[in-house]
Amino acid sequence: MLTLEFSGRRALLLGGSCTLALELAGLMITAGLRPVLTYRRGQGRRLIEEYFAGRAETIELAHLDVASETSVADFIHQMDQPPDYLVDFVHPDFEALVASADSSSVRDYFNTQVGLRSTVIQAVTRQMLTRKRGRLVFISSTAAQRPNAGQGFYAAAKQALEALYRNVGLELAGRGITTVTLRPGYINAGRGERYLEKGRGAVLKKVPLARALEPVEVANVIMFLLSCSATGFNATELTLDGGLSASK
Amino acid sequence: MLFEKVQQIIMELMDIPAKDITQETYLVRDLDLESIDFLELAVSLNAAFKIDIHDDTIFLRNLRLYLNEALEKTIQPKEFLGRKYPFLSAERIQQVLSDLEAGPVIKVKDLVSYVQWAGGKKKAA
Image (cartoon, rainbow over all chains, first blue to last red; front, side, top):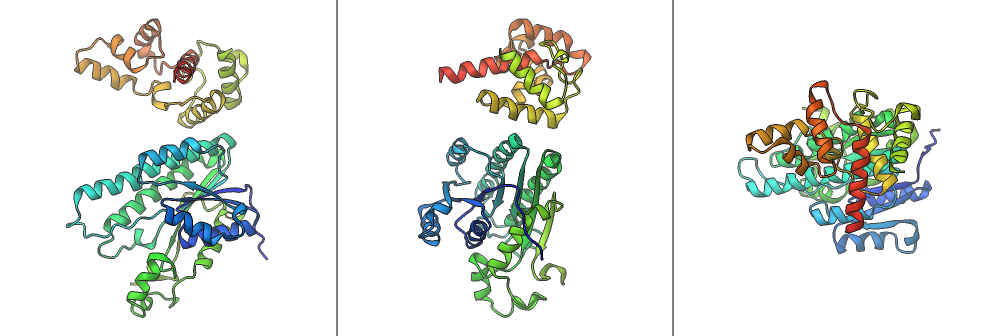
């Protein structure tokens, strides 16, 4: 039986109010890790607080809006100790046909999703460097590899971030900091769940596994990727989609 | 005092004996620092002195770009570099200008000057 071992304790979860992050934080607590969940709005904070009602002392909360320069600067300023792990779930949608998208919205989207996020990645990895230890997992999407119509900008931002995380692993693995990207397919959570509900049956026919993944399955995979056993997965992307992207 | 702390950081980072690190030591020409070493150096200086480190500035990265810009704008290079690198003395800038042909100019004493300057800025704030 594989026993997961962890070299650190403190885990920063960007986009901490999404279903996957909450599920992961629960697993982390069971494994003796200390999740720090970031939220963008009061609604996100309430979701986290409700999820961890009665065990609030097991987590930490931090405000971070990756679309706000001030918020990013405040977040970095307040980071008093380096996290051992970072899991990046932030994924605001941007659905538009490439030829019809509003160009200023496109610029804003890339500026925040890629530009400002790289500032956060930079700050976290510099902190990790002081200890020469760190593991970063970027939660991307199969859309990065096989987008549907309307997902061009979303896919481009995901690919840009994948490239940044890949290079962090390339540049800093020798200093104890490694990275891996996970590309999940359809999940029974959040945006994926809503999409599946709209086109139930038809969508899942494309998945050889013939079902969507449950959040806990994905969270367990992330736990493995954070563990010492998975360090060899560095500067690369892994697909977790039940075979979706392998088929025509 | 500042120099000794900077010296200590470089010693630990590069595994070099103290005697090989003086104020006049070149970081690239003498110690063979590479980009990853500069990154670690920036992080260590930030942690040791609790000051913001702007990597491009402290390591004089855009020196040649600034010299081209000065030429384009017909500004004296010495004056232009003085604006871009406020932690360097006029005397040091003159040395830098006359030393460019031989390769990367950055020395240990430039780091010390930056730390001193950034520390002063922090206190003033």
